[in-house]
Image (tube, rainbow, N blue to C red):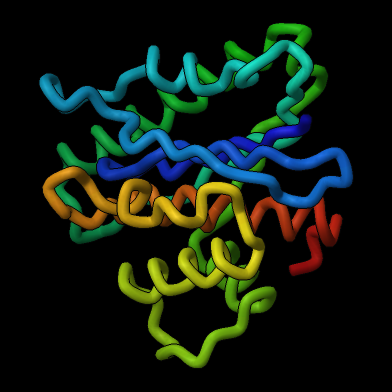
Amino acid sequence: MKEIIAIDPGKTGAICRLTLNTDFSIKKFVVEPSLFNKKTARFDSNNLFYFLRPSTNKFNTIIGICVEEVHSMHQMSAKSNFTFGRNLGQIEGVIDFCLTFPIFGNLEISYLQPKVWQKVIKEYFPLELEDKWSKEVALKYAIEIMNKLNLENKDKIQEIFYSKRGRFLDGNVDAFLIAIAYYYKHIYYGTDSI
């Protein structure tokens, strides 16, 4: 089976693994809720390294790795900007290290800006929603996509997108949507024109 890995690098970010069937249709997905160690509030490179390994068996192949291309904002403090840049650099470093192994072939990291992946999602899954993108809108798209694609784990929305205490995990939703956008932009449709 083929797999796509998508990463939302924010502080509440997450990693998503899409598993594809042999006909390249989407079978299921797994989301790892956080890239950050909750005790130290620092990036957890072991978690990312573990997740990048092909899942379940040696016959699975990762065919795409996508990271959300985000930038620091002018209203952020210097410390926040520095931390953000350091974390993104660590993510890229772990991925680059993993890509040195022959199992990954000649993969490269792809980047999708938020406005680009949101546009792809809106194009392939049109919903009558407000124009402004928000966490609530993203969740509605994620639920719609899970139901439309009839994914194996579509009945676990509460477990995937909410913590055990009921807190909304927007990083999980974004990582899932980034993976879906990457799939439709590069695998299903196979173009960079969007």
